[in-house]
Structure formats: structure tokens, C-alpha cells
Length: 167
Image (cartoon, rainbow, N blue to C red; front, side):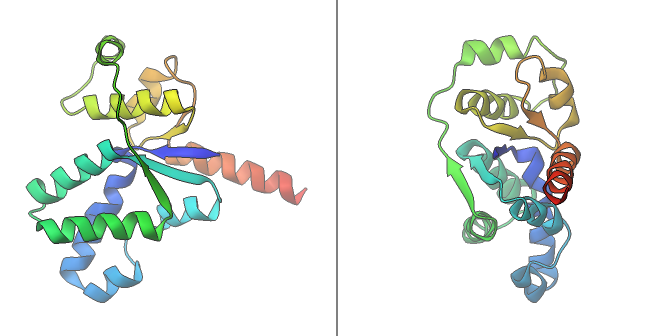
């Protein structure tokens, strides 16, 4: 299974990574902090993991502007993330904004939703499963693209596959 991780899905890892880094470098370096288990589960599944340059831009904005992380540490934490979890970063180089505009009419969306819609549109075009941390995206856009999953759903799929392999 090829899965595109949206910003909402991965942001918790970055938030906890910067907390760990500021508190205890060793905790950060060993990866023993909250949110790592969710990502490690995905690595265990042997699913192919992807994210986008849109997610990268959002993570950089949040780290730099909201968490006041310096430029070099922003880049380092991003590289640590993609390396640690063998994530391929794909370039969203074409956006169909008219389609995104129509998507905005499918649900009541909050500020900051456009990057999520762009990533969802990209995952659909690439026929990747789309993993989101935003349950509303899954609920509101399941008719747009049926391959939208939350962590809980991915966990269920993996557990079902594991059970079938053991049977």
C-alpha cells in the first residue's frame, strides 16, 4: 500500500520532536518521545510512505513561526523525519485550483484547509492512499476520494491483514 501522509497526520511528531529536542537532546536523538510510536507502526507495516512538499512547507511554517525554531533546526528535524521513517517527499507541481475551489463547496472548512485539499487532490491524482489526522477531511471528502484513512483505520487494516497472514 502506498500512503501519502498529510500535514495533520505528521504534525504531532514534529511538535513532540521539538519539545524533546529542547528538553533533552538524547531523548530526541534516540527517537524516544511521544508520536514516534504512530510513525514506527507505519514503518512496521512495510507500506510505502510519502508526503509532499506542501506538507514540508506547512511544517516549516509552523516550526519557524509558531514554535520559533531556527532555520537550521527546522531543516534538520525535517531531514531526520524523512530519513528515520523512509518517507519519500513528492513535489506537488501542478494544482487544479478550479477543482480545489469546488472542493471548498463540499464542506464547511476552517482556515488553513486549502493545503489539505491540495494534498488530497494530489494523492487522488497519484492514486495514493491519503492518511490524514483530520477526521473531518475523511468524513467530508469520502465521496471525492474513497482512499482517505485516519490512523485508526490504517491500524485496523494492518491488524486485519496480519490476522489473515497468520490464519
